[in-house]
Image 1 (tube, rainbow, N blue to C red):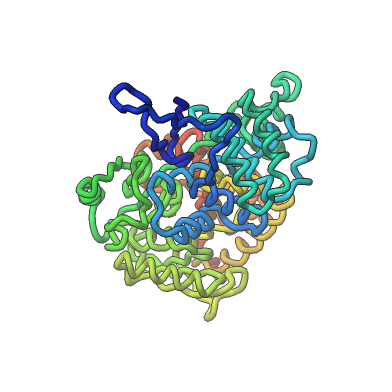
Image 2: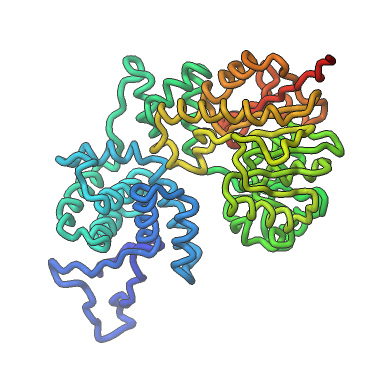
Length: 493
């Protein structure tokens, strides 16, 4: 009797009984020679392919596109939703490696392929290279059928040939020599653009750059920030245990809880709706702790969406936080987040931080979490490394400089300006600060106050200049940079 390999989401279980003496007369349920059973594309693969197409063709963010696709799918089995998530993010993380592997077995360059064919090949190549327990035949069959389902049936023969050849080795393309081309070797091994590897190697050293690339290929943990005005971390942990959700305290932020793998999305947990916590990476929490607003301070969060830092600053003792964002829709989302957390000291305003605010107010603390290249968040947004270019870094550096010059005018004499970015490029971090200080002698850098976070944060998360610097390969968090700049007292006339 021919047995059908049954892997979750690949084929339905084979319904026929095995021939045995207990079942007479014996019924031959074998497939006729040359017959191939029909293949139906699993929902997970169809969803993942559609998300990949939206990301590549429509410029969508993978997390938002995937959330929308899963909601549109309706009642989907948990294992299918999990598989769709794994296939989507895995394919994006390893896309540069997958394209090289496909090219070895294809006569046609990737850029000449129909987008639907390209998405199906990448998705299938990811399974062949990174899920060795899934039968190769099943992956090939699903990949070919996916090409047909996406409306590219004329290319099904081509896809079948490429995937069958790749399935024979299930190996990536050969790597460039580490000795001859170290940057090319690391870029190919960890599916990063060469220019990123070269910049990180120049800034951090080659060994750290390679470790950073490896860390970027890992799945980021789900982390929440406990609403310290409403509850405590221990109370939230107990509430999560009652829902059979395992969590551990963060190592750096006293407000952080890291959810164990397999936990439901934070937005779907009852405590979120009750305002007991907010989804926020531990490094992002450290920015507010590093800013350390004095009790009763007036605070401006100049580029505040989605509002995590503004709400955290409000919880840390600020008298009032003005959260500014360019878009009215995002400003409303900030107000909704503050309301859910029970915060009455957060006010949101839709305005351009590059221009003076209405009434030209001044503040004890100004936080500029500036628009940036986002290269510290590649674990969560792997599509960013496929889109970003060196020109983007230059353009964003210029925007950051304009914003810094603008919001610095809103800092009271003796007040504090905190500049932060969720990226790891010298142009947007150290060099940006150096340029600002050269043009604004009234500001001087200063270290954070004692006890600003956990003792380990002071060791792992500060660089030699006492700037906040979280590196994913060291801290297991997103990559962030921040600096505290104290404005001198107003000169007497």
